[in-house]
Image (cartoon, rainbow, N blue to C red; front, top):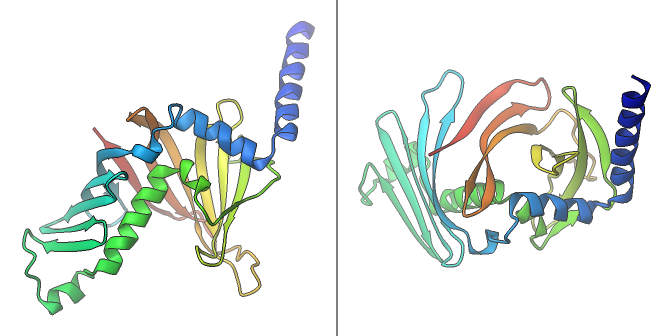
Length: 240
């Protein structure tokens, strides 16, 4: 028994030493090596089938195409009897509603259809499915120090990321598995005029399971919660 206790102490000490020796950019590189071992994100070209489940609402079924080399993005979403789509082909924007691109101003307003929203969806899907690789983008400020935190009973290595003013004002925290460096949680907070975190703002997202596409390990399930009171918001599920 003493032998096994000694081994456990040595392992825990070794892991603690790794956490102390790593800085933020080094931890990020290790996580990228886990998720994108062959460096394929820059040439990512794939279609994703995503189902969003949320309380008190019917599922939203989406088909998303991301082609980074050609600067092409497409999303088609259907909920109940309404189907909309957005296409961004470089700078060209196309919108359809129930299969038609002849949309009245009233329908655009009712269904919140606009090219600005198309760009929002492109940024949303590309950023979240491109993590942690997207943390190498210009304008991202990676904290040098990493922390070891316990979240819901599990230990993580935590990386802080903020952004230049031209990019955004939210502050993000990324939680990595202490052994594999897989990204398992991310969390963001709003900030006040002085750049201080608003503790009751923002959300955290729990990632479970992975799905490999183009040799990249993407999160299969993303469950969203409010930071303030742990209220569950919904789950994005990456389907086959």
